[in-house]
Image (cartoon, rainbow, N blue to C red; front, side, top):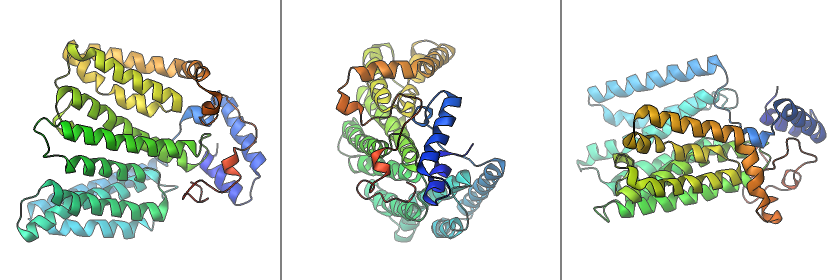
Length: 356
């Protein structure tokens, strides 16, 4: 079966009509007994050939970085991003998403990690938060924007969002010895990412275009950092020192509150990625209280519970909300009739009609 992105592209080329695309989507939804929105699809690999190419590139990059580190040639790390960018233009991210993921991710990671090394080696200064942000995170964000402009690959905004959260948090790194400022900054930045993810979602509530896939990755980033910041504020730790290590039985009530809030937001937006990210730290707290097997059993039980009853709970929740608000959210019906208005008119704000 063709993916929703292929159907959208075929419609844009005039190969099939909008009505035919709707009927094909509804046919797929009826067979799967869930709509595209409920399925929350995302395209991460294009087959074994794609995975093999991505694995090969990852091994070569890792080996090259190890060799340069051993030989004290870290200054040469700076050549990786432009080389990867040139090579990236010779592949199709639509048909090789896994390879595109490694290409773009590696270029951004090398920019983020190696430019500060090159700068500190050249100037002979010790690395610090501001130097890392100015010479690492900001250039990496610009590198990501170049990739995004050329290919509109859905995970790239999530890369940029991660760099944004890290930059904001780094600016407040030395404000307090208890990491309160760090966690508050991370929490605010994560909320900004969540709002951006919601915007992408609300411009494509039927999840028929790549905007919804972009939103999926942004929700993953937002859910991870929101949960980490919340638990960091509870324990006084920062995320890179494992903000869940000191969670125990006395944190059960705030833990349940955080999970409940994440669940309500996830059900409202029909985004499982948010609650999934929030449940990951629960493994740590349940392990601290009891045993790892007990933690895995409880978390696994809730994941299955959410999977089975998700749509039923969501319908019950939406009945309690204003109709005008619910109209802007993904539908609970399996099939759709007619196109959503934003698909027939100019796209919202700066997003242009390029299949996004």
